[in-house]
Image (cartoon, rainbow over the protein chains, first blue to last red):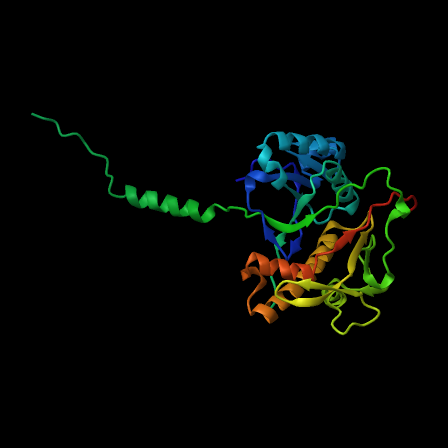
Length: 121
Length: 192
């Protein structure tokens, strides 16, 4: 039930204060994690960004967001959300770079994808 | 003599179909997408000089630093993530008007009348080497602290959960406990 094939390993962190992504059609995804084994000799084992079906650099995010916007209705653009699916062991350096790019693209509404934490009562 | 056409035994067909149906129902997972919702600040205009910012008093800022070893420094004290929520709540609420905690400005709020609204801002800064998992845990606690305060106020004032209030009531509570979590501009610094 996923639109893209993941090329990076993503285990999202746990959190309790979750909000659901309401409209799937308005969500763009950015995946960050270490590449899967078969891509490691080309792309290395450091965490990489995946947009759509391919590996990307931080500089590609601006184009990606623009493309995502153009694919949607003009009236829906202000309600678009970017979902960041980032592996929990990634360093913040790459995430900060992505956030800066998103700010440049004025895609300010973001969602840090996370799993529901089992709460101890 | 008419030959009898042999029939395929179809008695069990329905059972097999049901079994397949149930099998696929059970094994299909719909991944519900959920996460921490945040809003990034817009890019500052280029020409704005750094020192143009209005000064913020020290007592109004709740500084959270996370280093590359995923350790937390909250208001100058080493803190565990588990204790962060309580500290943030105390800071944002300032129930006894402690003078080391943020100031309050009186303001007219619907349903509540004259209320002191905190000037407190939570400032979060992380290192380049901080783990994303820790960063999310910290964000989660900070968002959680504000959600907890809103929930408590909703229960106290309306006797209902914040989620169940109507839009106006939620807005009133939001005005009293604004979600002010600011993330420091990333700095490009050399070394380590």
